[in-house]
Image (tube, rainbow, N blue to C red; front, top):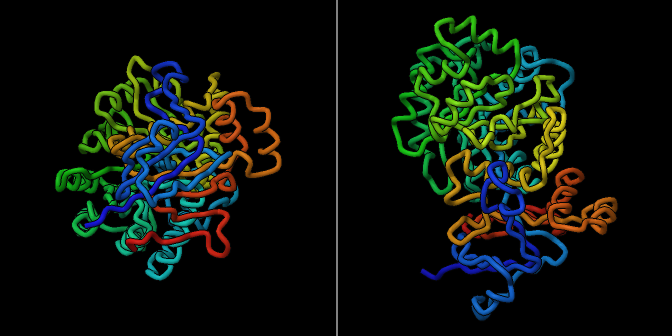
Length: 449
């Protein structure tokens, strides 16, 4: 078999360690002129072009992006693809918002053709935003999972997704049972988990919509295959927290509901986690469970301010990734999400610097998902999922970039002024699947598809 070789050249930035635990500058690796050498979808070499140029085989001309910034593809740790059709819905807090907008939108996914149409748009919008991996909620309908993974497979993206489990407190058309939810999930696991780059995530929506029996069935599913993931919601809204207390009076906290069912573990991702207490943070630290910080959603619904710097306290750090949520979130762009994350931190009396921000969107999210051995960095042995950022994407950004005196200042400008327009190109496993400046359709299925 003949190997596939490719190379990218240009300014490049990547995180190498956790800037919440040590000095930010020590965690950032930046090369003014870098080479990324890619073989069979994996980074073979990364470093200064002058040092590595002789490694480029004859006949391979690096794709050159002067004036841009090569970076790891963004990782979204919490997003609902079926909610794309009601993003920006007006004026409600969490529980009312679910009843008014979310559940009606998800009922439309009973139509498999609708699921395929939305999955196609959603994957392309992720790639337009430079996001190459996401942990994704589908709906209760198994074909919503099939539609999503099939589209991801076409682009060869590494995605994590699962069928929502709900057996109470939701409209009848969206309910399964503990047994049916288990059986349908198990069939999807057999069909998709580990197929190419697809990974399965057991997905109880949140404690109020699952009985004890269903949560226990979710725990059994996690034991059925190696490497499965778990996603659900946690402590998003005060009314939700109180409802959980009423529904599960025997449990000591919202998180304890999940822990009792065996769901708090490595590769478990809990969305929002706004109203957390120290004991819950300690539990996440001890178990290796992750939290998804979703600032645009938490602000949009008025849910509250995530305690980012408390969660990442080096004395008992919790793994935190970044999530767009959508539809309560208002953008699939991780740059825009970082813009809001900065403001949330500032309101809580902290300053989120650019290195910390880009860590959350790349290596930090990879670590929270337990995938940092292959994602989140530009480094040999890592999968070549790369976004090319354009600091001059708009006249204002171009003007501001001219006054940036350091890479940190340029990154901060990108995370406050940038959005999908600042993504020049997106590479998946070393192949360019999105090119902002390509005439006609900017998306291109990889050769293997």
